Length: 287
Image 1 (cartoon, one colour):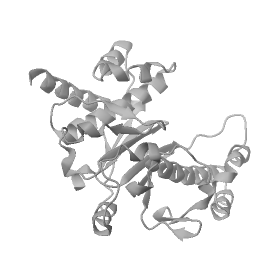
Image 2 (cartoon, helix red, strand yellow; image 1 turned 180 degrees about the vertical axis):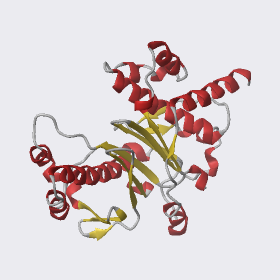
Image 3 (cartoon, one colour; image 1 turned 90 degrees about the vertical axis):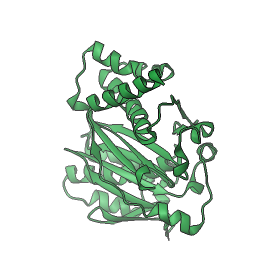
Image 4 (cartoon, one colour; image 1 turned 90 degrees about the horizontal axis):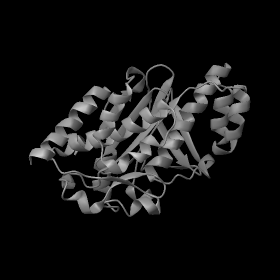
């Protein structure tokens, strides 16, 4: 089951395509997905959207190893999923509850998948606010943090340290929300994160330990970090829960998934994604 735990990341700053190169990469994706990419005006936003889609299809082809075309759909809360009707056809029966999540910010686009537990991923770039101080920027988010978290943020040191501390807590909360497929961030002040130098991360909800969840925070390049959340399928938002293969697990079954290793991120180039997608299309053509 460990094969279903994937962590991939692409540094988009290393890819500066000509219009023809961008169009070619886009052509490797199902036509139904093109408008979600071309709707963006700025090239950097288009790159992030394109590579996000490429990562999803590349991961699925690499994992499944069969040449059946598939379409990735999204819930009303924009959480990506595979249609249950395709689950058995795609050979995913070895994974009790395969699901994945993507994130992009700054220079990076990343994807994470899990074979049983829910997975959420969130990348943050420690962007310095423009036209306002760090204190002015973060004060709009006060209501999303517990009093302890907020104290840790504002007492982190210099304004740069405060900003980084803020982003790290924020990415964990976003990863948690994204794992559930919710899209709602109200009441996040009730979810309080604790850590030891950003390792051994744990969380409580209204003071009660969230023992069915695990969290990680990883430094990613210069001034970026990525948070991963792994949690129980029964916590999924109603719009996402209906897309899952299985929601209820015994304690023993669930603990196997919960305590799978959180594997290291593998950095891929856009050229590698293109090569794998070309291979998938070639196999589809000759089958």
